[in-house]
Image: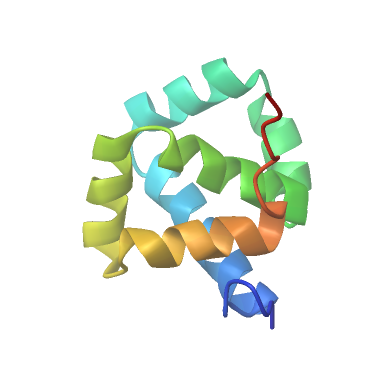
Length: 98
């Protein structure tokens, strides 16, 4: 378990895989994800179990508040749980220096 997020890595991966399924269920959503991420369907299939890829999927969803809320509602999670899963997979956000 990640002490900072309270989310087990396995749970975070499950949430991210559910996010991938959510994107894949809608051709337009998946097309936009693939276009913006620059990866192809074959690469996505090959790397679907990679924590970095899974973190990237959650990162993509979190960047669009509407998409995040639709996903959270559909899977019965709070946005904070999705953010915790993202942090578990991708690590904490980088600190900004001034």
